[in-house]
Length: 405
Ligand code: AMP
Ligand code: MG
Image 1 (spheres, rainbow, N blue to C red):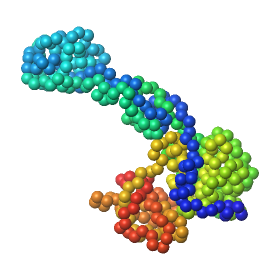
Image 2: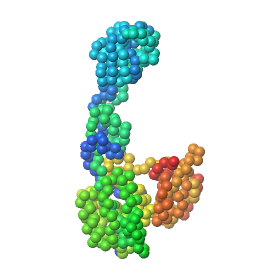
Image 3: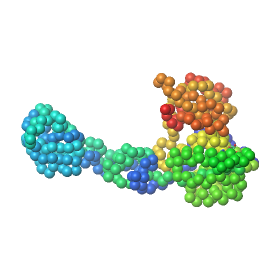
Image 4: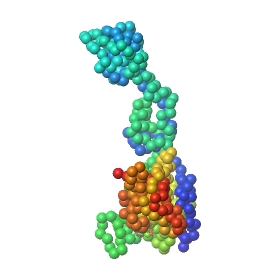
């Protein structure tokens, strides 16, 4: 059986290889309303300064700071969007509202609370610094300044910045189109009655959620029975529109495991087994025109852990993210951790705050069929192979999936 001839690749080496062979998708121009969560494809440089004019930061009176302590004559008003047209000379003041342009001749604004108003006359404090309460042109952003670096995901603040600069669309990387399918004669649509030996296709929904969280546009192909010709037909058809193929099941060494031979016939299989628990049969291939194929193991936890380790960073690279990996934090192991066998084990943990520290508690049995080991886990900790393991109390770097409540 050909599958068993694949060398067992170190998990870190396999993750590196996947990223090395993953391209970055081209950019497209997207109107700001469609930009949340997209990744900027080019640096954004300010074409103009912000603010463009000297603006008042408060409601009050615009005046010359040299007139501090005086009784000044109000000669008009500057409201946001309706500037005062004249000059502010000696002994004059202009009523100004927040966001109003500072009139010519004035160099400061006094807050209305600090003045005494009597008809058209306004008495201002004895000390008024030049520039007081004035939002100088370019004080928020200078023209030519680097505003956002490419590779950065766009959130509300970034999109607001672009809008403030008058930019209505941004260059962002295309989203990866992923075709998702589940293989196995035992699989049944979730919700339908089960015959003897049948199970619901739970991986489809778990992987669909993981793919969407990672920014992919997903075409769900559904269940394919363990028949080579059906599988080939569906995959070839799906690859016409997809950048990435993600399958679950059918990659371990068994007569019904059809994914590896199919990928061998369609492209180059670079990884067929990894020294990783859970997830040893993980398979990765490159196909024509920069397409990628990930054959994930069928066991539910194995499919999600290999998704985390290999697929998520690749999807981020495709989308142009500068940062491909989850953040890590030092945590104290709350249990004696041992990797079963000779593979690096990604154990699922719940993080609990104890004083200044985060403590990693095990989610229980780490069996690859037990989704309960992943539900509610905040983090993964990498336990190297070997008989010694890592004793409780040791500080390790945890891969953070979500922050503890
Ligand atoms: P396989 O990798 O096809 O040998 O499958 C390994 C194990 O994962 C078997 O117990 C399968 O029944 C189970 N499995 C495979 N595909 C799925 C799926 N889509 N949803 C839930 N379990 C699955
Ligand atoms: Mg199977």
